[in-house]
Length: 84
Image (tube, rainbow, N blue to C red; front, side, top):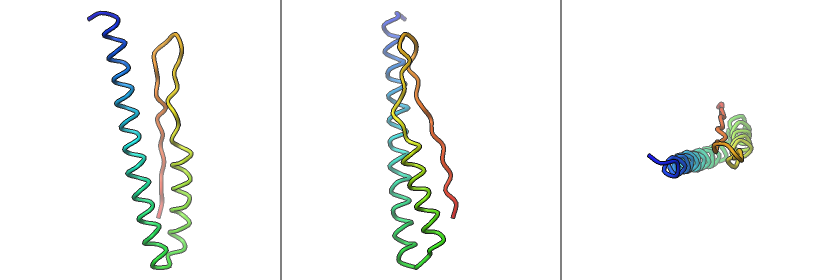
């Protein structure tokens, strides 16, 4: 495999990671939105506070990928925890 092919494979791999992160973000975002609606409807104030914190935490946790110039591209991974 030539060097050009390796660079292409690294770019494809990074794109796959970033797309997976995007899909996970939207899945969690919509889950939290649905859970917030449920908490509002049934007056679950304690759960609503935790859901608001989770929403804010995932918004802070998702970052654009970082690239190291002259080196290999790297992605930022994120972690979050939502407690009910």
